[in-house]
Length: 226
Image 1 (cartoon, rainbow, N blue to C red):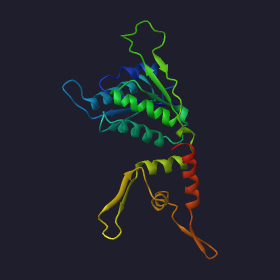
Image 2: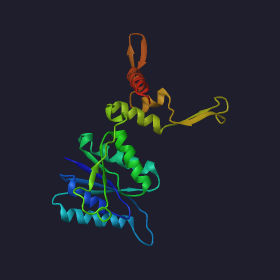
Image 3: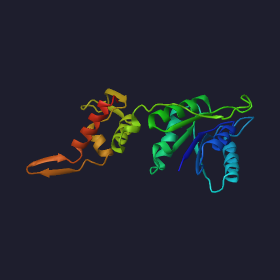
């Protein structure tokens, strides 16, 4: 099964063109914002496209995925990550991401996430601007930069680290910040998030159950350049 993921905005024709060439079509996710202006209502565009796709393709599943900010790259990247996590039984190479539509920022986020997650990515030519082409869909030669080669535990640890924010306060006053910053987490916090903080006894010694495992995973992430 191929899971299609398509950011969209004002124009949605690229999705219809894409699905005609990249088959079979069984499930499509439409990533869109709630932007509304004098010309277009982007949520309405997504609803209209959903209706048309269901009419054109028997048995197709279409789901709309709303993002807050069409000019925030993280919004699009997070949406794609959430969709792939939801479809956890699908192989990465069975995801197809259309990087043509939406804002330029959404398209850039889609390309970067395809690289990070090791999925296929496609660009669709405009039929009106490129008449007479045999094909209008091109699979982009996007190389994976490594996360696709990670196991699930390594991805979870990296995700927890990247989303954490570390703040160290003065132990005497508990108010003065000595050090702070994003992408930093203590071993204890990481063990708690991984639910591996249970203490086990080994003779007279006590140790945390997942400490060795987490240290090994972090070591592998360091080796991979993260």
